Image (cartoon, rainbow, N blue to C red; front, side):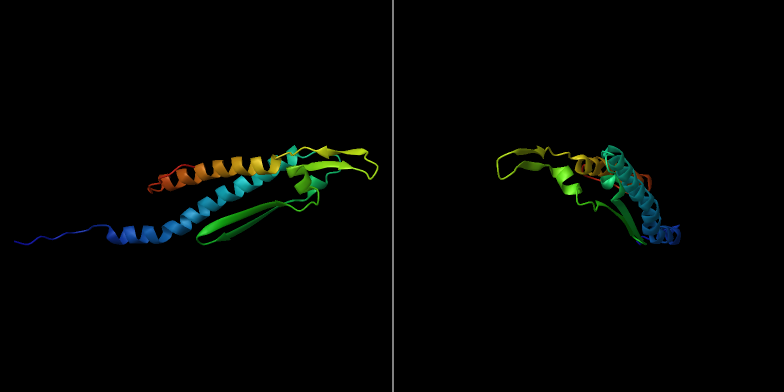
Length: 137
């Protein structure tokens, strides 16, 4: 008694698997860039426009490769950290109060929200392409 297996379409499956990372990286790259650009727009819109310094120093850089994409969003303004994290109460040598600045977590909260949305979109992309995704976003 003998048994044999015949696979039909194996060459096509191998070809699809070879192209899958590049196709996922291309489509996923659009999602990553869109999330970063959306976050930058939200952050710029949320900053006060008194001098415009915080808005004009928001930078987004995108890097793509055959297997992935990366976007970096940063604010290079010297006022960005105090605006985000706040400041302690300041006093002169004579004890006059010069005030404090409460934290405004606009940058951090926007990044967290946009990243969560992006992860959900990337998860949907993988599922649409027949992959199984486990875990929470």
